[in-house]
Length: 540
Ligand code: ACM
Ligand code: ZN
Image (cartoon, rainbow, N blue to C red; front, side):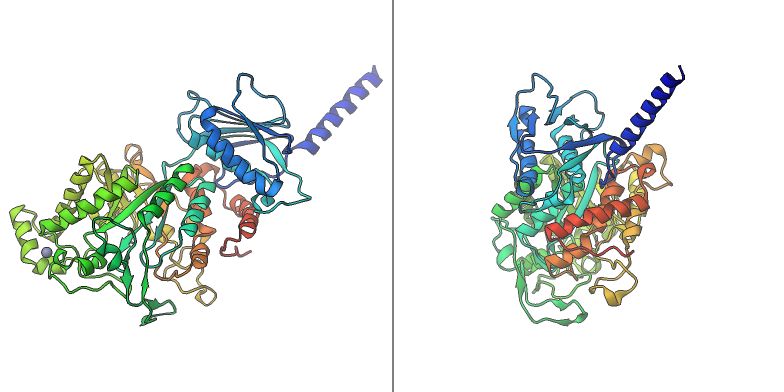
C-alpha cells in the first residue's frame, strides 16, 4: 500500500517536473495579444513541414513561404486539400466565418504537432502569420540561409483582435521624398505590427509628389523647389534644387503592395492651405494671381487656394478624379489644416462668396470649401477626413476628423457624432525629439515624444460618454519630414516608436504593460539589426 502511494507520488512529481521543463519559452509578440496561454513543448519547423490551406488563402501561404524560405532554406509543400484536418507537422490556415465578432481577429493555436491559424477574413490570417513569425527566432528574418538555428515555435494558444479599426502611420513625402523601395519597407514594417492604415501626405507647400495626367505642370513645376533649409540651421539655405514625384505606375505598385498586406492607403491632397506649390503652376487659382514659387522654407504659407473662384473647385475635382481611380480607399484626406485667412479677407472673389452664401466670415468660407469638396467626393462614393481645423466654421456633414492640435477637436467631433482619428502632437508626432538631450539627437522640429510617452497614450478621451467613445475610430502617428532628409533618418524617427503606437492601437489597456513591452522590444529589435533597418537604441 505504502509503496503504491510512493510510486504514484513519484509519478506525479515526475509528470510535474516534465511539464514544467517542457513549458514553452518566452512569448514575444508586439502588439501584445489580448489573450495568450502558453502551452507545453514546441512545434519544430522542418523541411518536411507542410502547409494546408483554404484555396482562397493560397496567396497568404505563399507569403508565409516567402518569409520562411530565405533563412531556413525550406520551401514548404502547400496543399489545398482540407477534407481532413491535418494532425501532424503541418501549418493549417483556414477561415471560420461564424466564430469571430471582429473582421481582423484571429486564433493561433500551436501544439507540438500543429500550427493552426483561423480567422474570419484573410486579414485575420495575415495577423496570425505575423504573430507566428514573431514566435520564431529573430534569425527567421535573415535574407540569407542561417545554419545552427533550431526553428522552434513555442506552444501557445492566442485569441486576438484589435482594439481600434484605424491603426495608422503617416509619411510626409512633400518636404522630403523617399524611394519606392523605402515606402514598401515602411508598409511592410507596418504590417508586421498589425498597423493597417498608411496616410500618404502627397502634397504640400514645398512640393507636389504625385503624377496627375491632366495637369503635367504639377510635376514639371509644382514638384520642384529651388532650395531647402539646412537641418542644423533652419534659416540657412542649401542652394540646391530639390524635386521628384511618384508616377501613377509607381503609385499603383505601392497600392497593390499595401493591399497584399491588408493596408489601406489614405492619400492626402492638401486644401485650401499648404497649396503654394500648386499655385506656382496655376497662379490663377490663388487670390492675388501670383507670381508664386514653390516654398523653400518651412512654416505656414499665407498664399492659399482662392475659395471664391469656381476654377479652384474645378481643378481640385479633376485632380480628385484621378486620385480616386488610383486609390481604392473609401476615405480621402483633404488636409484642411493651417489655412491663414489673410488673403481671403482682402480678396473680392472670396468676399463675394461669403456674402452670396451668407457664410458670415472666412471661417465660414473654409467650411464652405471643405463641404463643397465633401459633396463632390460623396457623389463618387468616397468620404473625407481632414485635420481638426475643419471643425472651424462648422464641420462638413459626413466628415471624419483627425485630431492633431491636442484632443479637443476629436472630443468635439465625437460629441457631434463624427468619426475621429486621434493623433495629438504630444503623443503621436514622430518628427518630435525622442530625448530631452538634443546634443545626442539629430536635428528635429522641436517638442518631445519619448517611446514611453507614445506607449502611455490612451486614444479614448475619458470625458466622452460610452456612446460618444464609439466615434473614436483609432489612432495614428505622423512623420513630418522637414528635418528628415534621408530614409535612414526616417527610420530613426519611426522606430521603435511605431511599435509602441502599434500596441496602443491594437492592445486593450488592461493587457498592456510597459516593462513587458520593453523586454519584448529588445528581442524584436534584433530583427531590425538583421533587416538592416535603422532605429533609435533603447536606453537602459
Ligand atoms: C499638421 O501637423 N499641420 C496637421
Ligand atoms: Zn480669393
